[in-house]
Image (cartoon, rainbow, N blue to C red; front, side, top):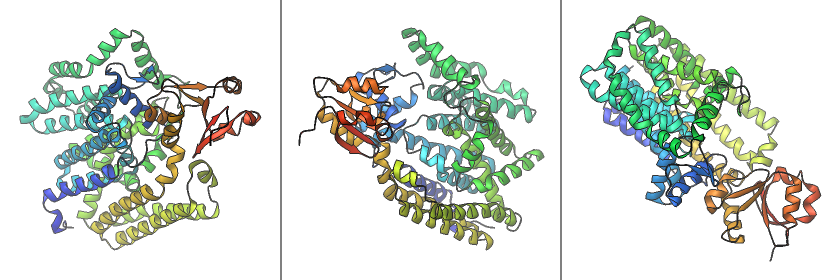
Length: 537
């Protein structure tokens, strides 16, 4: 099947990818308020760097924050210096890194299977649910994903092109160093494992002599090590906390914060790659068959990349859905290559495409019916969502997927791709304008933060019951105190002066015996500001 004439120019392919990324990653980037959890915390940490002019020791709520290395916080802090302390500035680095990941994936895919397949891979990556969402929020995982993708791309391009190794391999080592600054030792352990397995399975271990390892170690340490050295000199407890507690313990210990079963990432990966996840199993199968012939080393490289990241984090004791983000470019390459071959060799994989996509339509249809018959009322109570809006958006999604299924049955494959990308963009925009404003009061403390900031004296701390809200710290530039028991709250409210406390609704309902001692000053979403004095009218 030939490409549409408009897609025969590579400039059009690249421009289309940029436009799609521009809509999904950048559109209204600064519109929604920062959300709890993580967005407010990382934004507040970066803001503190700028205000205190301390870029060495990350701090959150007045305490040292060594849970993550500082690279992403540095990028946000630089963005704050350029654009001010805004939501747009906080999220801009993630959006830029997301765009960079898509373009680097395109470059690698172009070398492996040509520009059209690379274009499809870029579209798959840009429109995968988890990837584009994490390209719009303030988290560290997108930094790790980008620099691992860049490091592996530099290796493979150098592996295939001897004339460019002197430039590409040092750049790859530098990318590993930045990945170490983004998330720790896995920034170089994962790329090294992937490269080593690839050379082993290709029976090219002699290629190790071409990798400029001596210079690579120097570059890796020059980029990735200085911060670790300086912060260790300043605070000797850092090494024990970061490398032992935050890395080794989270991988091997059983008593971790996020313990999950080994298969934890299987459903999360399928959900995260929506709407392309139906094709992932067949793409993996086709990729394995293709790699056995040895004709295309790039397919084997993508398979090893995907499998290594997936198994590494599956074996880890502590698991979060965002950890597997670095495998998404590899998954996109495999799915993009599979779709390209299916579109190109019309008739060869028609049934495979149809039978892969059909379960998605059935699942979405059943989900819509389930929502109608058994409305998840907790979404209304805890998230502020309107079920009517959820029904409409889900119904439109189902209708769009049915349309895509019809296009597959009629072998209108490029129309199917266009429709799928359009559905993703359409559902994203509808959610952005009709669902996010409803959720925001329940996930962000922006409005209440502005209210309580006016009530407190300049030097006063924010006071929370049970759990602090990290967005409050960003929007007020204050530190927080957390009262952990009803007795502590009772003693606090017994103060001779007027005091204020921020309480979540779930905690408010559990301290009914104290309601008579409190006056509600303001309420927004699932939080209240209460005081021991009746508010002035």
